Image (cartoon, rainbow, N blue to C red):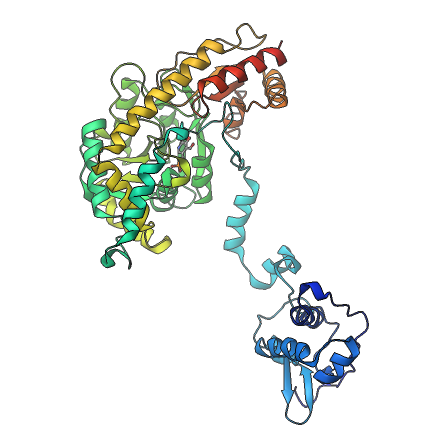
Length: 508
Ligand SMILES: Cc1ncc(COP(=O)(O)O)c(C=O)c1O
């Protein structure tokens, strides 16, 4: 206590302790709360422990325990031979930033965001927060998979026993060399295996040095957004398109422009009307969400645009493993002779999304910067998942699982095509589905789209609205396309059929 403080009397009224909660802890919390909200002002003299124990009908030791905790945290102080006092507010406030509202903070919720901004001048942080707040980020659908959840593979088919054995094997006798800090680009062995897989299965000639392991495709896209953009740079994205990519780009400060998608994929001629644009995000194998495959002519046009403008193409090959007719298409990156394509892959659609394991294949000129950025963000990905995935691949389980997942997705697609209610007013025909884990079908008008989705929800069927994937800002003259987006891989064929039967009833 500073010598000038006024000594205030202590008022124990209203202190009611609940023995069930632990008396010492409760008394500590009550006193701490009163100090923080100002009811026990700085300089208030607290009763001696014995006296307060008697006043409250509790033991002296209980009071001592509460006082000890308050001492330790600096809320109270003792003066030898003079008792116990609430610490001087002046003393406490010298350790706090200036300009705080009167009283002391009792938790984050007591800060009003405007006060915080004014007093700390957090303009830059404020603008990022504002950007995030103004974006509608749909929350992921929770709970067990239901028909027709989008973005979910047949992960009930995952060989969990194999994975569990590999995990146990890793932890039984981990190499000590692996338990410190690892390579920010990811475990070398896994990167080599991914490079081999991409060379053999996807026709993408790349080396382990070009690969950076990420926490799923989303982190890969987010890193591109942070590292490849000048502030306020123009970025082109497919419209309709993958909203989480557009949001990540916007968060990094980009001016995101939607480019129309037709039955050949993104309309590359529109890029010519965006002279400031140097970055484009695309999903060539299976456009998200329309399901269109980017034609060869458009692939070549896009590569030519990037080469001419020194631009970058982010190729998100999120579900490229799923191709049901014809040979799998070579990624755009495999056609790239100018090192302008950044390839994004994920294990989320072959294993399961919660694994959070993905990768980037980068032009050599970018690998060091991306690895360093990862080192600064997260140091590196968690080691056991990377090593277990490497073993999973070495033992041939990965290739076996891809085949199993393709078969499961195909059976589920066929179940949907067979059971889908035909002739529902306002709903267009089923498209041909030759890739991926979802499909989109047109609906006449947004009103009908909402009505159908609302009715489906009443019978426990999840359907996404195509219009929700629309980036509105740039397309004043074009209305959002209405439609239904259905993921067909999340549940077994019997559940798909049952869901279609319920839709037939409710949409009649
Ligand atoms: C187009 C697209 N890209 C990326 C992702 C995210 O993948 P990850 O879970 O690996 O971040 C998804 C998820 O559904 C997606 O639809």
